[in-house]
Image (spheres, rainbow, N blue to C red):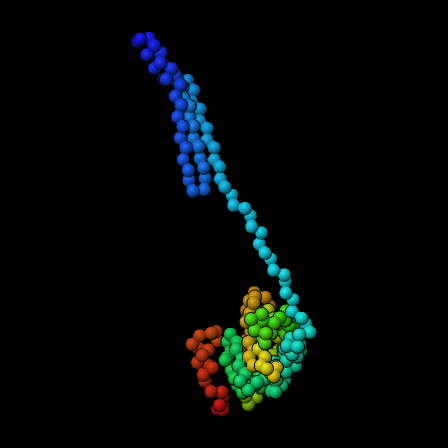
Length: 246
């Protein structure tokens, strides 16, 4: 009958229900709405799967043995045989020795010892000290010793600039407060120095060497300019020493 049909339509219009759900790769959403002629209600739920926290495996700290023979030998060479902090011991260096620094090098044994004879750093700064610390054995090369230095001293002597000893620059009492530098020594089978790397600055904002290491930092403190890495420095290294010579 017409009355029953109208009642049915009225019931359908008085309450309308709709549901919608969808799935994303990592989140699940569900939306429902229910509407009538007088009220609208909405609800939403969100759920996400959070992966479990995986604990990191922290390896133990490995400390170098201060009594290791190569560490002891490196310390001896640094303080008393290197030619930089003291007169050199020529026999401490192997015949195939190589020196490298960020500004000077590579140098073979003859050139290295000649350079030490020229600068005579230990005479220009009689109380110079590397204040070495942090000795360790390279885990990839058991014949290599790594360590740090932070040079200090007062330049009361003269710095040499030529092999004849005629060109000398007074230190004028300049105080050296070096920045931390990374050094390394590689020993051969006879425990002679096969390779020496110096002057690689770890923190250029420390000290008064303007971020320069090794002899270049000392030059800066004394007031001697030194060319930055580049064509000018390579040209200066190529030039023969004053007065000739090899």
